[in-house]
Amino acid sequence: GGHEIPGLNHVGLNEVIPDDPEAPYLLHLIRYGSNGPATVYPDAYDFAVALTGQTGIGRAHHVPISHTAGTDNYIEIVNVKNEAVSVVLNCYDADGNLLDDSVITLRPRSQEHLYTSALIPLGTSGVVTLVPSQPDSIVAETVNYYRRAETGQILSAASAQASEPFGTVSFGSYNTFLGMSNWIRLINVTDNYASVTVNVNPYGEAQQKTILLSPRSRIDYNLSQSSDMSIGSQGYGAIAVQSSEVGGVMAETLRVRRQQGGQIDFVSSSVMR
Image 1: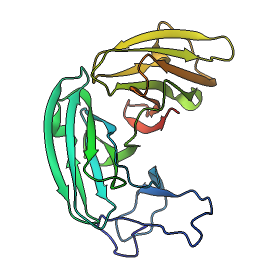
Image 2: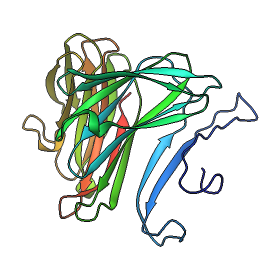
Image 3: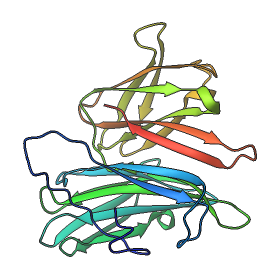
């Protein structure tokens, strides 16, 4: 994945070209954080982040961003083509207000890592919309690094790859074992209001909540502390999200586990489909 060639302290692009283009396969890139210095083999790992291999995108895609104490947020944007590509970036706060708009140009096969925590005020979150100039041209993800307040040491990391909405109904799951809290992240990527109905356990004893999203806004809804839904502390189940806007709302599930002192142990996000 890059540790041997080109080695430490580099960023780059891994391209996989199968011998049989018709053969199905899965591709994942795993980043690990360990307790060992760069040149010493570790005896323990603090965290791991999994990224799914993707083909380049050409339509508008979206990534969540945040700016919280002890956390650094970046967007990584990679040009997968052999020609230059420009990318329009629009940054919105959680209420849907446009905070920043810019255009970057990526040289062939190059990438940019943007420190997006600087785009929004401390203690807030938002969304960045990316629109590339060429079809099948970029891959992108947002990455959070959670640091120990006293030393700045990275305790954990989490990523979410750029995505787009899937129809009007999407599905995911929750799991409250191992002390995890569960969230649903809803992002309205349109210029219209969107009504979203969240169903927990839609095939059993269903619980339902309707949420109204203003244009270009985002809501992170804490299922584990919801007064409208009860998912318990030792259980799992299905989640269904239905939007009034066709292809207008992105939905993700998040599982968060904290250490005894309240610091992040790990965060896992999954796009609902």
